[in-house]
Image (cartoon, rainbow, N blue to C red):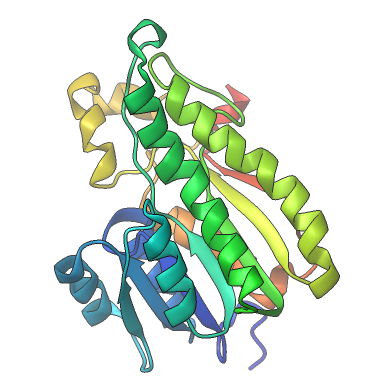
Length: 248
């Protein structure tokens, strides 16, 4: 039966695949038939992700993409791919008056510079197949909305959203599509830092017209769409996945 969302025959690179959204995307893409290249810093947790994948042909490349030498090594070891999902990222809350250079450089480096530099290396080394799909996991923050304390995080994600617009134009000569997914609050290990501020889950859910918080599958299903041929005419888009939050 024809399935436009199938990823059969596609090889997909997923960064930040050791946990959270990256892990969820890797697992769901394997269920749709893709071969997955998992990368991250933690070999133990990447191995746990590997064991969750369906099908065969998946493998791990250990890399810390905050380091240029690891970016170059990962690009060298990576096979030719039909899709990339840049999911690695960090979030730290900090009011503007307490921002310092060290924190700013840390977050901008991991969330913005590293995935941009990795795409450049993959493209330069001809590791992106013609008509490949590239996805950056951005955020509502810095693109559609923001909250107190998220200024650096918003800057890093907003920068990615801007970069994607130009990259989509430039890479279109090879038929390569570049998009972002901009999630609202997704329940993952990283978002546990917010738990102290969320004392009433029902009250938090009321902020969303669809009356629930996001889960990793909400993002991974959007990624499957953007990686598949079903979205072959979609590029340069910052796709909100937010339960209607931006409507409020």
